Image 1 (cartoon, rainbow, N blue to C red):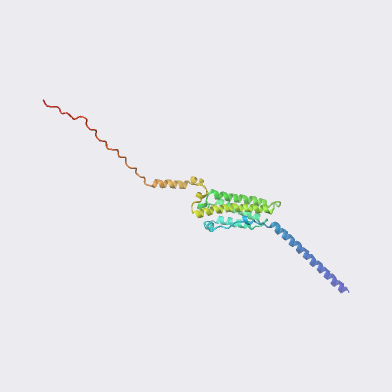
Image 2 (image 1 turned 90 degrees about the vertical axis):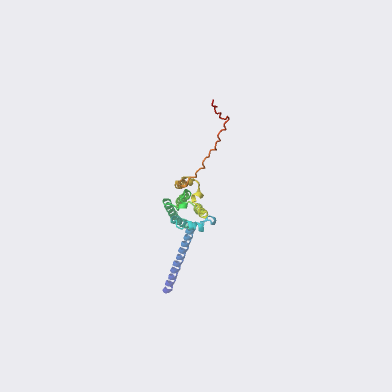
Length: 222
């Protein structure tokens, strides 16, 4: 009888432990689902980051700083609410490297630099906003879309420079033509080297000698 009672108590204890473990697993699963739901960011399809065109890739293939920023942007578009704080900080640091270094010859213009500055400003502001739990995920998602638009603006100008195969300053603004003193000096020096064309000599018309109105009268000898 004692053995039977002991066996029943062991079974009850094992059943209770198993039920407690199942309850713990359910709670853990629910907390993970809540965490993932709160942490997940969904970028609208229309606002997602576009891939570079072949023309853009060719022009920036040796531009290490641009390619690093591009990888940062892809990472941010696939990031989570909590991981994005670090991702945005890294993006801002990499844009700083672009500002310090000289851009490729065709793209070293203020319009592109200013857009990178706008992108960095948005990244730092969003980094600050993401730390505030009261700000909803849809606000973070909309700001990422706006950052994508700024990055696309840079890519568009790069594409135009590549397609038209002309200097970027001719596409991005006439203001840089006036400030490019090097090109201006070259143009002046080239003009100075050109041989001067001699203007045709002015030939004054020959003037006819006036006809003598009176015949010369010789004096008679007496």
